[in-house]
Image (tube, rainbow over the protein chains, first blue to last red):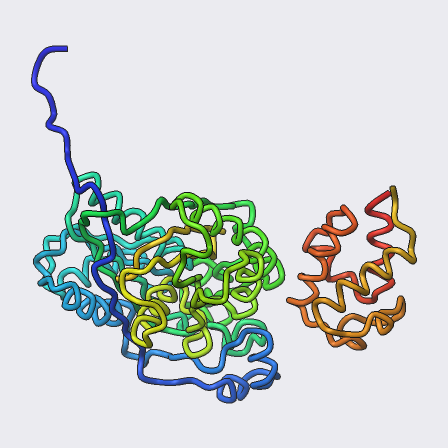
Length: 335
Length: 82
């Protein structure tokens, strides 16, 4: 072939998490408050989920507001300024505009424009999907620093009268900056979907069903609890193990395990099946935060670093799993 | 080789004991998993998955809700392994 050739894009050899930032809304919601509208008890909720409290955002506090707050912390902790950010990925299922994206607004408010920006819809797997994309973008040469944010206001989509889901969800945002590295700081991603179980976790109705008619058709989140529990523990533990194998590490090498904070019983089941040794710190932010979907992994990571449970630079196994059904797992060096 | 009713009952009792700490002789055919044995939906799923492995059968999620008593589970497993 003769004629002009397109120049190849070249990126960094390796990537890592440069920082993590978190935003937790001020309002703490207790199980007793949840039980004012459902026939349940603090003890019942704790036994089934391990959840003691969760945070709910203020009525005027949006997904973008929380994403921006977490991102500001992450950018500052990375020692960067917003104009260093080339791309913003916001993993969310509760930004209540089909378009435009939360990410474009967050990039603008941060002062990161004209960074590329888009939202990711992979539910509770969204943060780990974002990490994988960010790492590949940097290695592929289309960005140097990528903000990956998980942000959710699940309280807007929680049916507070449904005793099987009312206690589960919380609000919040977590963010990381992914950047170039001289050593591999993000292992290979093991990911996938099982669309045959599309119905297992979903909005009860679509926007078309709703059209503002009445509250009975509002697209609250619904979940087939037993089905999700079985899938999460017995199908996802092998995926977490696969990510560990892909990184060339064994359970003994890990400092921390940071699974999606869905339910303490799922976490217990995964820890047992993975055979994690006692020295591996297991993130249990679900007790204080509830299930915050895409935000749960960076929120839990921020807590374990703040509490000194695992040192910066040590290896942690992450796995996100949820609606889709979608999942993604990788080993990272903690920022 | 198919398991007998008695073998399935005692195998199931061991699985229930491991998950909940209940004494094996508390697990009788006429006992309800929820009302008598106080087993919640997530523990029930753990018992189901372990029973699948032990007896080499498949118990789909949709069928789990029909297993009200220990006897229901034993006969389901007996039929499924046939």
